[in-house]
Length: 362
Length: 272
Image 1 (spheres, each protein chain N blue to C red):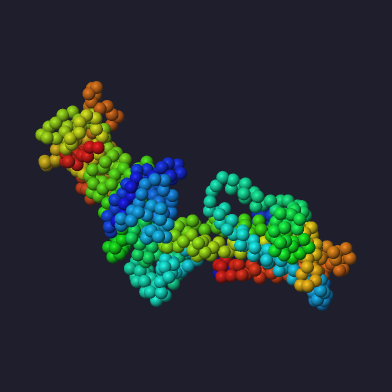
Image 2: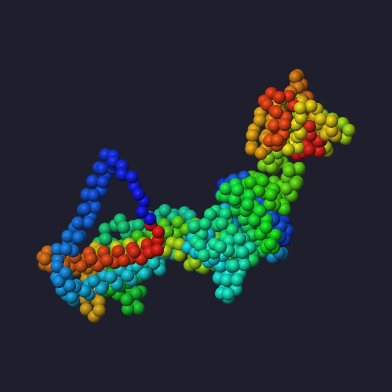
């Protein structure tokens, strides 16, 4: 278990401040943030490798804020692995054990057991310089885990890998975490990676933590527009709540009027995930409260999935009481199969349908 | 591994550059070679057996070696600090390190006497423990350190800079104290730069004349007196070129052999 309270760190151009984290034992915790948000610095501060201006850090109830890094029981794996180039794979893994003055046969046993766990038994005699990125990443993991740290810090461990290796390594990380009981803090800028691996995710923005929650909460209830954008919620609108109908708020977007389940009033910002919108050629008969007609204005092919932009008509005479906007586009996610079935083209008239509960008001 | 190269007609620029390069190579290469071969092996052997020659060779090599060891002990920590830390006045400090390279070496000799002469500050302290510098072995050593240690410090600094600082950070998280991380990670990884810097320092020490001629024109050595090789050469030159040539040939030979041996040690096991 690791607790961080009111941590303040000078990153250089800006400050990380008011960093509060409460990470449970054996949790896989993700810190998500854009490049340059100070993620690496935050990890190094936790590891004792970077000076802390204010605040405190505890591991398992013991305060470690001023403790030397070698006494914290924290392992770290960097993006480019930082393996010792003058040592073999075996010697890299044994490094921490040798420092602990373990007996030789114990070191040998632990190293080969750990090599087995991460699946690099056949590589132990090699030099890290001759290995691939994925293999090196496993060596770095083994080197950190063999000393049985209480907390393992992963600094963008998958970012330098090609997409296929990356996906495989995600699986391996999950597997290793299942086998080795350790609290993991993993920083990344990749939202999908965060969702795939994290029990919980913290989003770092502008030097502060913007939101902490489960992946599900990030998808459904982003706390701010920044988080919503980061979570690839492509539909973010401003609107005004103009009334209540059947227990739902009626939100005027300056074109369509949406039904949403919210307690908010007045001017609002809202988000709607592309995969929550259904596209059809005829109006759908369903319990979903929002159904509008529009025109396909763009088709962005992403391989197995396709993003469709649907433009809705604007209010012809916007009055002072309505939101004025240039255009009202909804981005919808469909499969390639659906694209073929519906035979969508630019200019096709379609209906979009979504539930009132799919709309998240900030 | 040999690679087949396709022959391509070189362009005019390459030809001009090759000719210019060949000229400077000949200029570097021919005079030492001609000096070595101008004396017969017999003459060289007999010269080597002359007492003032062999004691001079021993003095020069051993003093340069001790100078280099002291340079390593005091210079490598500084090189590490300079490679790892940013602070105000760092550039100034780096400029100070290179001062011995830019000032005339005989002036450096005078300057050293000002501090290490028996009438002065440091000299008095050392004198009280029986260590004199003027006309002494220790004088040769400090003159060599002064003029040659910048080469070692600069080279070691570059070596440490090339070591990824995160390797040290990882070592710390794995349980290494700062000392251990230095001796197990930083030092082994920078060893090649430090070694080649040492070779450079040693070679520079061997050839020092200006500073040594002021402090220790001749030094008490092995129960007698001896001068370092460059000074011996200058002395011999006063007697005539014929006396000088074999000594010069020996000096060149010894330096070259040492240089080749050390280089091959430094690059041992390294892939081209």
